Image (cartoon, rainbow, N blue to C red; front, side, top):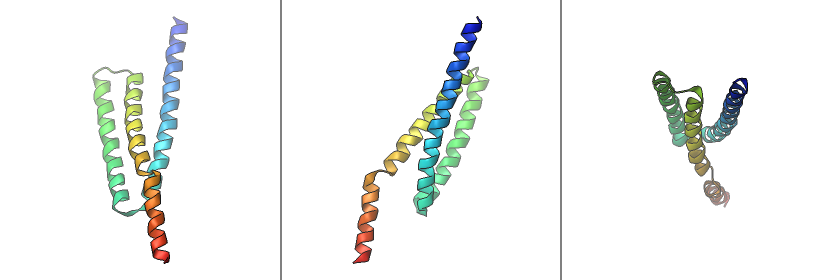
Length: 108
């Protein structure tokens, strides 16, 4: 029985550590977007706040329904993965190329 608890604790610890690492990547991508400024950055800030509120309500509802801590972490990891995918598309090389073209046009 003690060994069973150790496996559960180890799995939970691993999930939490992965959530921390993945969330750190999203924070980096989000900060790059916010540092660019403009309408898109403002929209990202609004989206960030609304997503956090929605995720907190979702976690609270799941806990009240009897979900385990591991299930809550899994939900958060899903949200983080969606954000990472969305933000990494926005920071692709295509947008960087457009910025270079604008800079070249201004220099002429």
